[in-house]
Image (cartoon, rainbow over all chains, first blue to last red; front, side, top):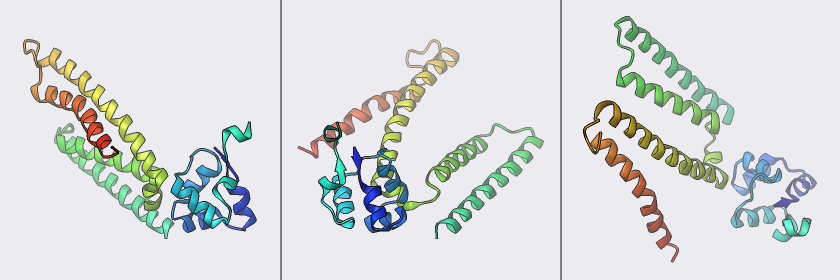
Length: 67
Length: 131
């Protein structure tokens, strides 16, 4: 699933490490999500949305929408 | 914290390898290389090396949801490989050492049967938790 995490993270001037610390996951997990190699759980998706101050549906772009 | 801790774990790992090489060398002098202790220690060192290389001693990476998924996926795959390996070993062992025995190596055969039953049984138990 595509997402806007990298774009929103950079807009907030956060590093992957910062975002990872705020969401209590590893930097590698944030990197994998940003590169669309891993789809986060619902819990992590909400946590990311909360930290980046957007809603979950603003954060993720489903395959159907991107087509 | 990460880099120092990682370096210390690599140092312990390299120390372990050094000790192992010394042990192997002394065993070679006395003509006993393939002892069960040596082989077991080699397996532990290889496994430890892979663990250290994969997780870099990063506990968070290992325990977060992606880490757990990696461990879960690799556990399922290794279980299947182990089951096939048990079958192959049982067949080889039976042909080489127990050609007249129907079961071959009994304990190896029991381990094989257990491996075929254990996973479906635990799937049943786990599935019931979601009913």
